[in-house]
Length: 514
Image (cartoon, rainbow, N blue to C red):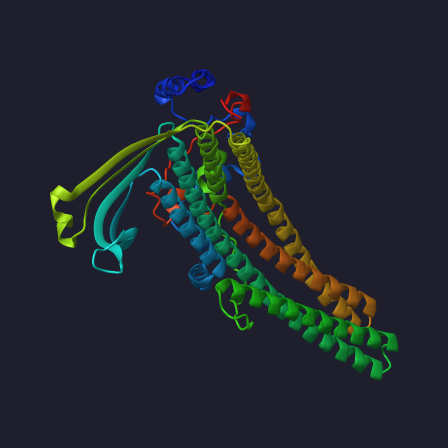
């Protein structure tokens, strides 16, 4: 029977007087099972056939041979990421969340199984019979007895409408979401370490550039001072040269402070004390070949945050089903078997055996709107999860498109500033030569030195930014081109991998009770 037919049959049975009608309605409902609602495809964004940003190569099939950070070709980075994955405390917290979700799924599943317990009781009792004196004695009549009993009790709730099943599947989906969160935390941590490492190497190169700049301006100041002593340069040139050297000293200290902070940040990610004694290679790595981004549809199975949002959407759908099933009666069966005697040795004698068997059918009639409120809460949570999934999907698509677009613009910026740096160096050399020969003024030297320093700084910054954008692209694509289930090292056999795609459920008026 359909869901609407089930509700109508049961309402008619309950609203009629008498327990017999309720029982008949319950029997008719045995063919009904509570299921989560289905998804409305119009509520989700439409995926394009290919990425709108990036070259044709970026839309090709993605490779999954090695971890994505291996493309940077740095043994040090490989070691740092491996250490972070083993020692980072935030990642350990995410792993603990997976363990908690697994335990919760086991708790939910335990409700579907029969519950058994064994008991052994021993009692000794004395009774006093007031008003019944013992002949020949001034005392009262007393009786002392000893009893022993052993029993095995079993109870089970028949999940007629799938309420327990829905709760168990919701918990399994929560487990799947926690596992996806853990996979996402690993991916994010690897990306954070890679970007922190690249930023540190970039900062080290900027410090080296600052030191070289100071040395260059020191030599220039000495030449200007020598010309000033010979009367060939005015005092303003000497003061400008001194100011230029001092400004370079101040800039160097600022760069060293930035480098110190980046080193400590990287060490915190590694789970070690941040004492800023870590160092990097002599230069930034070369930019790897373009990333094969795959198709937009592949993003659904590659990004852990999308997998987590999908699992939470499925869990919310199962909780809607669980809340709906709570309106229907619960059938519980209990039984016990054992023995009872006043002698411990008789407990194994079949003549002293006892047993009981009982059934209980409980139908909620009025609970102050508790059940309806629970159903409305589950429905609102489901609608929130659906909107959150759609927003997460849009954000994921936008991140990939933005990173692919930045790949092109950053490439053009690097080329432009590489040319600017070369021309500025040549101009600075010409300006210094002209100044030494007396054909030029010191202001031209100052301007050429400033432009050279700025161009080289900008070029280094853009190279680092381009590499970090490549890391962000890998992060936006979900890491390696493997599905989440293939990446996850957790055992997902205990979770229900079928992900129902819920949609806004039926109105609350379809439920039989308030």
